[in-house]
Length: 231
Image (tube, rainbow, N blue to C red; front, side, top):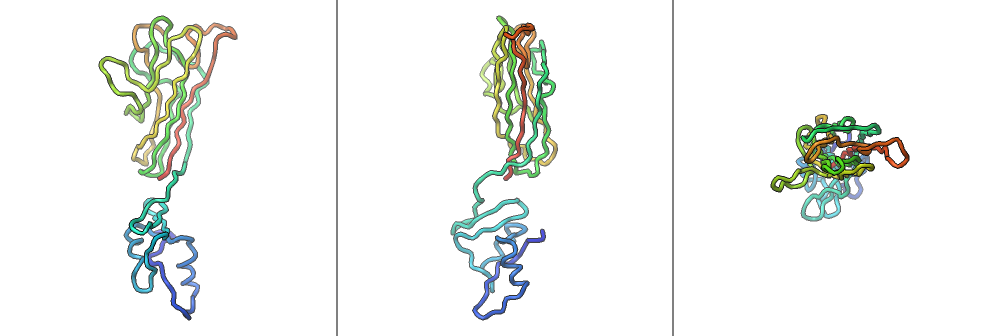
């Protein structure tokens, strides 16, 4: 148990002299702090203890949650909290001729969740192009070796989270927003892969396929950001 954890929520009777120990138990923590739901449930309704009733708050150390009692059950206080934020930012260019998925260098980020109950919000924007008059490029998102956030399989169609239109002189954005549940406290890597959908030729990231040294041709950036959403 932590320094603030308690095992009782006491009541006091008229005329009783309150000691410092009494006040420390009842007032020091703001709301009662318990190690687990078991010690929470045992702290109410016994001899000299407060009767559990609607509006009671409690904090549980094992799940890092604040709860309230609605008269019938304990419920978590609503509102997700954001924890650590990690970003990989790519300002250089990338090219490939692969028609199977390959890692896009510089678009990989690692986060270590603080709780197995944490979720990870993945936000990514990747700009580039397929091959003009040949094929679009396609992107996919992975957690480790597991593909996440893709569309449903349908026959021979290529599956990913976004496609980059074929172009000669432009770079198009592909955007990913995915709330993942990794269920781990181990270091977890999220990354972006890409591929040419059909045919042959060079697909590009952060530049157009032509990439002429002219104000009419862009150089852009891409990024992947992960945010831990605490339970």
